[in-house]
Image (cartoon, rainbow, N blue to C red; front, side):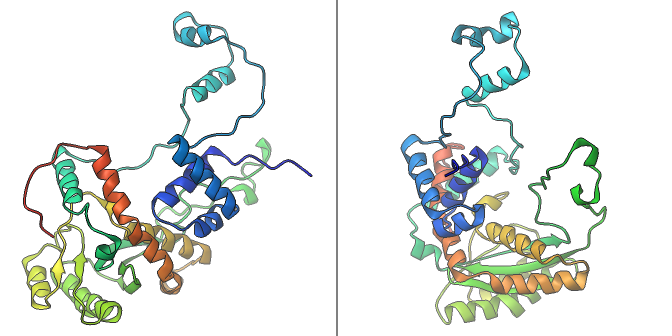
Amino acid sequence: MAPTREMSLETKERIVKLLEEGNPSRMVAKDVGCSQSAVSKIWTKYKQHGMVVKAKRTGRPRKTSKRQDKQLKEVGVNVCDRTVRNRLKEMGFQYRKAKRKPALTPKHKRTRLQWAKERQSWTVDDWMKVVFSDESRICIGQGDDAGTFVWCRSSEIYEEACLKKTTKFPQSLMIWGCMSGKGTGEMTVVNSSINAQVYIDILDSFLIPSIEQMFGDDEIIFQDDNASCHRARTVKAFLEERHIQSMSWPANSPDLNPIENLWWRLKKMVHKKGPTSKADLATAIKESWHQIDAEYCLSLIKSMPHRLKAVIKAKETPPVLRNASI
């Protein structure tokens, strides 16, 4: 029997990231293309060691002593670049693409930490009462941001089969949607710029039916971000008139909104359908939206306590004591 191939460190880190976001192990295994037992083993080792562990493997014999490792920079030991890379890996360094993260000012950090502390006692049942919403732009060809890798010879890099086609000005559509732990709500394509009145029309035509469908007459908390059209006085008046409680939201905090994960999945699904025109794109978006199952939405809502704990654990800044407000 041929030996099994060791899973890459990047794949293991992706498994841990997806599990920390609340995704079930079965879905994670399907996403990365491995068995559910492999996902469980990686998660168990991660909890034991506090880090992703790479299996020990045999390789080329060591070319430097530990003493020389410390003196590589100072005395210029004559070693190849492979040796330098190996030593950096042993010290925990990895060559990787820089992660994207919103720039946070000290004020942002204070607000995020206070917001998380005010809700750290919330249970999953509490978060189940929240309807999360957002806008997102989907482009034709979007969804493959990680890059495409191909096997080819150096003389074949410009062969048709080895290229990833790009478009300078890709066609795109802006959409608005909402979700809760019960599943996806309504979604609509927005064909104009969004001002306060357009946003009120969206809420009236799509948020209200979503609330009625998912919650009936039960009270809910509505979440949206701090875009100027969202915080207009006319919008606030509309929500109060409809007796909809609005949640305060820390600025520059897409990582706290589970609908961002839903957008990621939606864009992947749309990309697989291969739309080539705006009409195809609109159809692909609507079809993919209805294919997102309630189980996935529930897993995202279950991740909310973990997201808040991560903000608090990061100790981004000392808390500012103010009265809690939703």
